[in-house]
Each structure stands twice: as structure tokens, then as C-alpha cells.
Length: 240
Image (cartoon, rainbow, N blue to C red; front, side, top):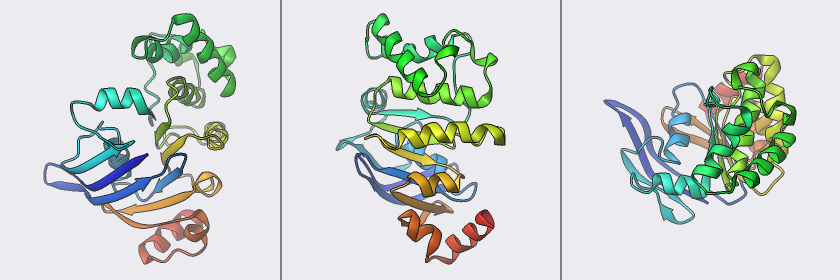
């Protein structure tokens, strides 16, 4: 589904990603963890060209992403759930969900609204369709953002720390939705600090530090028997 080849990203003199190579299979649930500043969010943003790589290539379904085709490729293949929800405040929940299907995918309004209600039902918010984002809690807004990603019916959903802006008591309601989603044939790439979620849903976990992939493996390998000293040090701080 995704191939990242020799990916580098600099912001000025700062080298944020250093020659990353990574393949994500269709239907795989990949979780990326690591300390702040390790390049996790930059990597996931390069996967749909929200950040343009300084060097290297990204392929989705064997098609190379370029500055020119990134909008079309995103419409065709991927959705993203952000840290800060990114809902339009002047639109109702239902309007937020139907905007992309109607405008970009040319889905008839009635059909888009029926689909949106189905996904709102799925994230437990069908009764909030006519509310505006500011009238919802952070957890509810993020669940709306996930429903919005589902409305585009893409095969790939990228999650960039979807719970890090939430109050602790709201984190679980979002994670529950994501756990349910992980049971479907959707490719998920998720940057997160939620280790319990990683253990529960990941097919593979990647640990990043200082712009490189330091270690990768199954959750079992990762949490029970990591090999790299840097990984062990990070997990000992997070898990104890």
C-alpha cells in the first residue's frame, strides 16, 4: 500500500528524517512510537505529501506521490486524522462529514448525508449531527474527525497523535473507536503515545529516534523483548 524509499526531510539546517525506508502492506495496522522530536509526525505527513520530502520517494499503490498529484492521490487513497481535529467551526457535524464526498468525490448530497449518518452512528454520535464543533467535547470532536475520514471511504487512514490534545478521560472513547476500526480491512498508520493501543491493534510497531527507524517488530517482540538499548530505555520510562 505504501512504500517509502530513502526519505529525507530537512527544515532549514535541521535534518528531521534521515534516509527512511519503510513498506506498509494493504490492511496492515502500523503503529509508530518514539520520543517527541524523533520525526514521527513528519514521516506520517510525508506519506501524503502534507510535507514535501527533501529527498526520496513515496509510493501509494505503486504510484509515486509528487507535488503535482498529491491532491488527486489523497482524494483517491488516503484520509488523515489530525491531533487538533481540524473541523470547520462554521459547519455542523453533518456538513463537516459531507463536504469532501460532495465537493471532491461528487457524491449526491442525499447519499453523502446517509453515509455520514451511518458513520456518526458508528462512532456513537448520530445525535450530534446538527451540532457545531464548539458544542462538543474534545473527545467527541475527534470521533467526528474519524467519522469524517471514514466518509471518504479511503483504504488508508493516517492518524497523527489523535489523542494527544485530549483530556485524559476522553482518550479512551477515541481509542475505542480506533480499536473497532482496526478490525476492518483498512490500512492504518498511527503515530501515538498510547502503548496499550499499540499492543492491542498493531500488526507491527516501529520505534523512531533522531530521524531514523531504530527498531521494528510485532507488539510481542517490541514490548516483551526489544533488542535496541535506546528502545529499552524509552519503554522503561513509558511503561513503568
